[in-house]
Length: 301
Image (cartoon, rainbow, N blue to C red; front, side, top):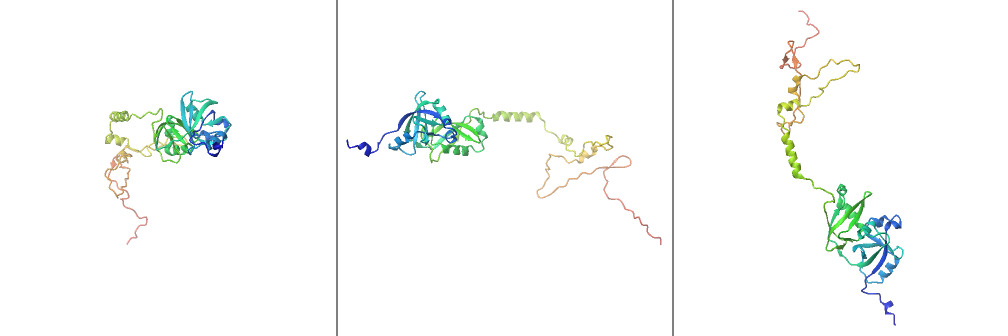
């Protein structure tokens, strides 16, 4: 009679409506919808929400009654056609919805998240250098998380799917302006390496290969310039390879100097043995130890 309904807003009522659901690709190029967890609703929904005593930020529960599946989301814009909503494709898959399927929406109030555990759906997620930073950047486009949902995050032009295994303090939580601890479960298809088998194979390989003694190490020593050269005219070369006598003086690569003392420098030099007229090796040969001769003879007295 006096119009009290117009003087006072509707108090204590919840928003609840049914809409036809379509993927964000029906709007054109709307990556901001596909890579997040927010939906687009019609302007009439905003008009009705402003007249209700709801709690901000606006969070909604989406329910597919045919499959008894539900999820939670935020709202991005109110520009959809009347009777329709547009949601990310990964959200349609979680709800088992087809294009034009009927979905129920109601506003909800969720607790702030303190913990969440994710399981990547592919081992390719292990190739990311800093997965927590990538996840944190991707979740900026989300308003809430729901346990058992499989969310999609885009990184380096590739889509990574992660299943929400656990959320605290409830099954559905708000992640707007919160400090949340994050854990990752092993990706789907990941196999833990059998370290015991690897250790056993290593021991078996070491047992089959006997350690080399000093003589074998000397035979396997590096010999610089020990090959044979070829002449450009095709004739045989007159030179011979390094004599075997050099083997004992060869510098052996790969063998550490156990007599090394800190602060000292050791110079290892090799010396080619000199053959005498008899063909024997003169081990006492010393370079530049002979006597010189003068070209100018001394004058006679």
